[in-house]
Image (cartoon, rainbow, N blue to C red; front, side, top):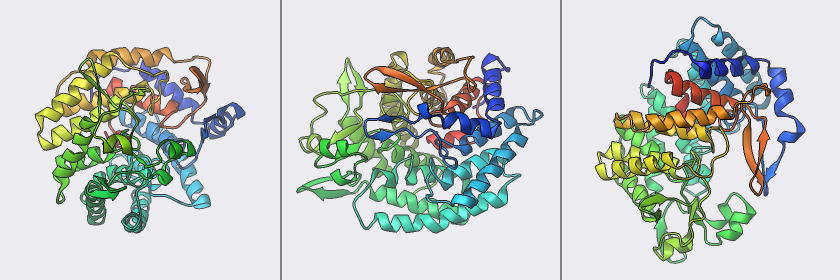
Length: 441
């Protein structure tokens, strides 16, 4: 994905961010300021979790790994090593509690891979992470088969889709490939119908009691189907499709991809010929076979909305050699990129940086330069958020009360300055490490 560009102002800003986050005590002081601890409704915003890729040290390691890959004479690997050492100490002190991409072992392993200079270094550490995954994930898969589904079973953030994205890097390791195949089999089984209130529904149905919040439990008394890339079926679509494109196939994989994409298309909302997606489809909407009667559309982002959904549809089209899926995904992503809705942050998760990474990925998947003009506009938009008086350059913005966007001092990959920096580097120079695997790209 290299674009061969020379170092410009964006790259220099990223280097400055990397220099500023090199002081760990300073990072802790800033992210733990009282103003950073807010909530959206009943959901608390967490500014810092040391071992979590989403909000912690692994994202900083990724930034140093990527910078070293582009500028090997500038000492970024030394800073990365320092932070990986801090991360190891945090793990020794607090332990690993989840195999997930954004809270646990898979994200830590991916950060180490990004620093490893093509597995030259940290092989022992990466092996220990992989041994942990080989021990824990099979137990989880067994548990999943014995109860109703949670989003965090299968999703990208906490579930096996994120873990599988990491495992795709280890196809020569039999234990890791076997674990990956077990996850693929689980994701295929997830598409088998189950019975809910006398109605046959897809197995990724999330019952009411397994919703994230009490508000959602009340809003969906008979459960729902999540449509976002972060927590919904676009994640499994991306993983099953990526594996298929890399020659890894289990029984029923193609049909599972088709079924999930058909669901996304069947429960889309049309506006002037373009498709939109709600975050969730209720059991009742599924039961009556009708698309949403009210769009309730919030934003175009990596986590929810058109960009993430279109990425999944394009990946499915590529994997299945299905030109209809490919065309639908690309066309709706082009409409999205020309008229982005509901975005007011430069970050990855629900900001402009996440959209930019999806556009870059679809350019690469299709071999076409569909989005070069839009990418330049998005880059300018991201740069408009740069605050020269803020030590880390880019705030995260969250809508706390009504339409008020509150600036927060976050550092992590998903909604912090590190994610913005990695996104800008990819737009300017291409990516030389595997950090985008965290985003299923």
